[in-house]
Length: 138
Length: 138
Image 1 (cartoon, each protein chain N blue to C red):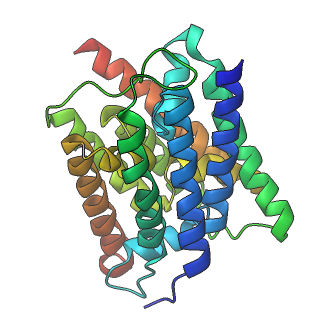
Image 2: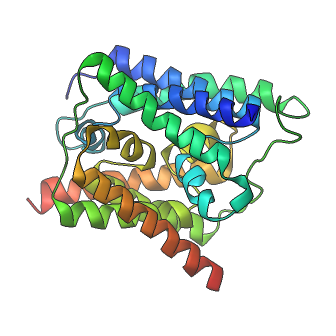
C-alpha cells in the first residue's frame, strides 16, 4: 500500500466540499465539472457563471502550483492513450450526466439513487480498467 | 454579476482543493484505482472529506426555499436508473482508469502546460459534443 497524503487529502477534499456547498447556497447550482463544461454548448444565455467557475478552477490550481512550486503530474501514457481516454471521459460523462464531482461529491450528498449507481459504476469500471492495463496486459 | 462572482470564488476554492489534495496528479488517481497494486487511498480521503462537508451542508441549503442569488435551485430532475446513466458511467470509468484523469483534474491540470493534458481536454470536449449529438438523435 502507498502511504496516503492525509493533510492534502482531507484538507483538499474539505475545500472541494466547501466550494460545492458555496455554489449551491449562492447560485443554486451543482458543482459538477462535466455538467458545467457541457452546459456551455447548450444554453448561450447561461454561460457567464460557467466560464467564471471553470476559469476560477484553473486559477485556483495555478495559484496553488505557484505557491508550492509546481504540481506533480505523472501521466499514464502518450498521445494515443490521452486522446482515447479524453474521448471516453467526455462521451461517458455527458451520456451518464456527471462525473466524480457531480455524481460522486454532490449527488451522493443528496442521496440521489442515480448518483450512487453512477459512482459505483464508474469506480468499478476504473478498478477493472487499471487491473487489466497494469496486471493483465503488462 | 454577483452570481458570476460567486461562481468564480467557488471555482477558485475547488481548484485549490483539487491541487492540494493531489488529485491533479494522474499517478495518485491511478494509484487509487490499482487495488491489486500499491493501493493509494488518498482519493477515498478526498471524497470522504468532501462528502463530510456537502452531505450536511446540502441538507441545510436545500431546506431553504431558494438560493441566495437566484430564484430557484437547479437540480437534476431525472430519477430513473436508465441505460444511458449506467453505460455513460461505465464508459467514463474506463477513460478515467486509462488516463487517471476526470474532468475537474484534467482542467485544473492544464496549469502545468502539458500538451498531453491539453490533448486530453480537447478530446474530452469532443467526446461531450459527440454524446450530445448521439443522445439528441434518439
